[in-house]
Length: 352
Ligand SMILES: Nc1nc2c(ncn2[C@@H]2O[C@H](COP(=O)(O)OP(=O)(O)OP(=O)(O)O)[C@@H](O)[C@H]2O)c(=O)[nH]1
Ligand SMILES: [Zn+2]
Image 1 (cartoon, rainbow, N blue to C red):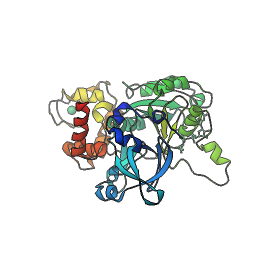
Image 2: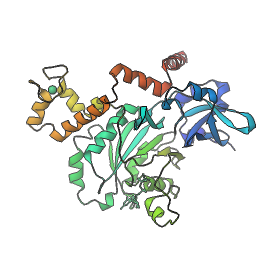
Image 3: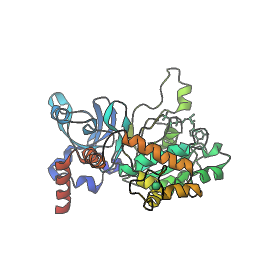
Image 4: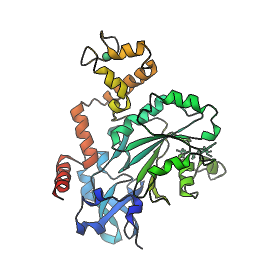
């Protein structure tokens, strides 16, 4: 069996990081079950584990493979497959995790993040800010996907409520039920692209992916309800190729999205711009004199809710107790596995 890995998101930028002799050992993690990883390779699927060396050298959870990772594998004893190395990540979607100091990787090597939110009960502007904060930091581009348009009777109001938050973020309104708006997702689903679906449980991610697949591959709530074996909501992530040539990563619904690292400057671009005019460099925009942000709140250019949301996320991130230099180092660790590895990648890139 020969698999065209382009259908699983393989790009030049990944291929350039390995040598010609390493090519046959290339695979992508498409699913993970504890310490077992399902890989797609040029010759088909393989179940793999990491080498003892990789596990031993790992200083954080982010040093282990995640869904979306490109890896180099080799054959171990007894026909097992071992993951020797994770190739440098082009993007990393991560969130805070309980009892973990380094966050938890949701998915890697993604081009576009579909932030899914339903237009009914789940609709929450502050949650969009939360998702955007981690998305802008990931290296992938966010797109807001408003689902269940068929049950929404006040679309204009909903869009107005989102206007300040979605500046610079493409927004698509769609329904997996009626098919409306699905064509607007297609530009992000061209051959070779990897798209991750994130969003709360029940917003319709699995239903949407099934629709794009043209088949019921993922179990959805409706199906689950008639299933007396009582299957649960999506619990694992998986990467699936679409007929369009793109591939998608389904992530389990997250009830609470803790932020580990994020990009507030981009998510709250207008507040960042205003802050430049505050009298004090380290203005917290609470009660300082000469605060340009408070002035904007006072005359209605920025809503109070939005400023509060900004401050809340800022506090949440600083709970991690990391300064900006440490955050930068943590990011290098997440993306490349360390400073040395990052240097090697850069050298290789500039050589070719
Ligand atoms: N009216 C309407 N209902 C939808 C639509 N899409 C999904 N649903 C329903 O919403 C429920 C949840 O859909 P899922 O696809 O399971 O949601 P999910 O986001 O994958 O949920 P998790 O797997 O828990 O993360 C199901 O009952 C779907 O039938 C839609 O476009 N319109
Ligand atoms: Zn200020």
